[in-house]
Length: 462
Image (cartoon, rainbow, N blue to C red; front, side, top):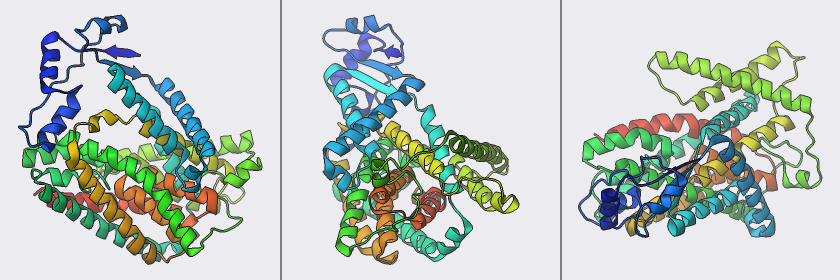
């Protein structure tokens, strides 16, 4: 692990005069308190020995610890088990469908926040494994997508797409209205809308430089990332409770004997009915790897045409094609669709991915944002919950699938597709499978909505 310290005493004194513990809070505070914005230099570029950190100056010590890949992956597994233990000790967490990875990941993020606040230690994690887990997760969804399910999801898919596009516009109008009411500079409002919330961290990173250039928001990247981070936290917490409320109010339940798309039910886990052979696991991993490798190759071909798609979307589409073509061409070939092995691999990938995403959040970057960001995202959360209860759930049919989709919609509206899937998985582990939800929601949130969001954002930054 590398330990980094301040570059020199002059830089350290400048940081102290600005009243910040690092580079992020001051940049935010400039915009959200109305003071003159200034960019704080990065004081942590010089790598020093761990023993030298204590000698950096009178009572002021900041060390940056970089946790390497394998250790980060191992810690993520531990974080998941901590979350599972807490969910078991506090049944209300399971009852409200809070995913184990969310419980553990949030606790880990708080621990790193305490390390930064109390001991001036900034902990960051290598996340290369997280990116690969994302590919396994979406490929697993694609391998479960049969044409019969896609055909059945035609009308619900179109309805979900339409109401998601409508919400995207509402989300941007909410950001513009609340930002104007609070007197925030032009450009900040765009960053607190669908760029950072529906779009997430990836869209924020892509569009922040454009917003910065167009509106002169010098710290557009930092503001957008902070909004996306806080949105991810909120999205992880609201989806399950919303679904639980709808299920209880309308007395809904899922099918009794249908296999889950991701993971195994809590009942099956308690009964130890989740045995998977080494052969079935290896067979499933082999098929999944073939789909991912094909996705890598196809993405390069697509990129040469000038059209850019996220790699996980390409892998998802490749897996959908494979799972509907190969079994027809070779009916005797064992195929992992709806298998317990594929469900467990998808569940493992999702849980570790989400654990890594949440435990790596740098919550101290939010500390200097002031009341304005909290108010804007508070308004966005209220609008999201109202929209789910009075638009999404009725439009999707007021049935069990609609309740599961409502949990997922909370994830895509304020967080990201993996958060949406985690919310839905937590619900289905208790109440039963919902194949429809796991087919149509990823297609809307991981593909179509990104294209529409890009068009809307292009208009807003003109």
